[in-house]
Length: 186
Image (cartoon, rainbow, N blue to C red; front, top):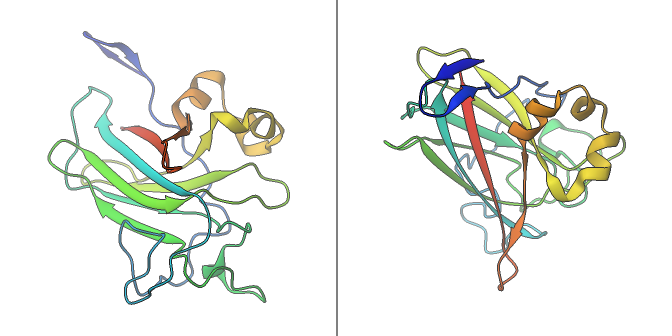
């Protein structure tokens, strides 16, 4: 928690587990578009999600040139990059990375993650910025409130922490979903 004279107290985005599903190996295509793999004409199955975010420190200053990584399961709830019998949607990248711009902004095109036993819908993210501790956390969706409240990792968060990692899904007339992920690191 830090005090900022213009915005009041700021909480740091809470740490959470990277899961057992952080990639053991990375896909050949590691960019900010997880729904389309370079060289393939078929896109990943599932509803599109445009995830936009910003990265700031506890004083509210933007952080540029930081690495933002995301990873999550495909529409069927499979993390295909961890091995196993079910390789999942071969057209879903599963993991992506990008850099924040001069205003601390970043963007990913992905799909809505599916569900698997014991967890609510979520997207893992990791932030690596020079001079800051690496942050690993997870993003949740307000529309899944009942599922979120049954999820053990989500329930461990305080109400204030939940507010920092829970976002609304907005759907355009064309059917594309969008969500926002503001991140604050120390």
